[in-house]
Image (cartoon, rainbow, N blue to C red; front, side):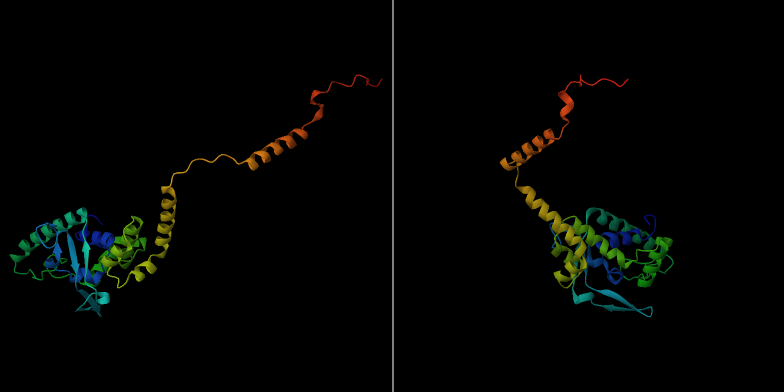
Length: 236
C-alpha cells in the first residue's frame, strides 16, 4: 500500500480518520501545510467543510455529516506526505496539460488527469489493495486513529472535534471499550502518585505465625531423640 499512487490518502484515512466523502470534496484552499505563526492558521491542518455523497454512482455536494465544519490537525509525517502528493499532482498537471486533457478541479485527490476521485473508486481501490485479507473496510479505518489517539491519552473532546461528532457523548459511546482501559489506567496512576513504604506485619500476624510454628513442632516425630529398645531381642 505504501507503493500505491494514493498512499497519502490511505495514510490520512488510517491516522486522521476522515470520512470518504469529506476527502473527495477537499480542495487545496482548505489545506494548510505551512503552520506559519505569521498567518491566521498557525498550525498545519485541513478544514472539513463539505462532503461528496454518492447515490446510484451520481455525486452530490453536501454539508459535512452532523452539519459540523471541523478542523483536523496534521502531524509532521502526514504533512510531509501531503507535500509529496502536492508535488506529484503538479508533475501530472504539467504532463497532461500539454495534451489539453487536464481537468482543473482544484481538488486535493484526483486521477492522473486532474479529474476528482469518485467515492466508489476510492473504496474499490482500497478493497483491491487489501486483497483477500478481508476486513477492514475503508470505513473501519475511521475508528483506528480515534482508538490510537485515546490510548495515547488524547483528550476525548479533541478526538470528538476532529472526527466531526456532534457531541462528546457520541464519541464516548462509540469508544466505550477504550475508555474502560483509560479509566483503569487513570485509577492506577492516581494511586501511584502517593509513595508508600512496605508495612511490617502487625502484632496479630506475629502471634498467628508463632502459633503455627508451635503446632508444626508438636506434630514432628518424637522418636527423633530416643535410643533403640535394648530389652528387645531378635527371635530365635
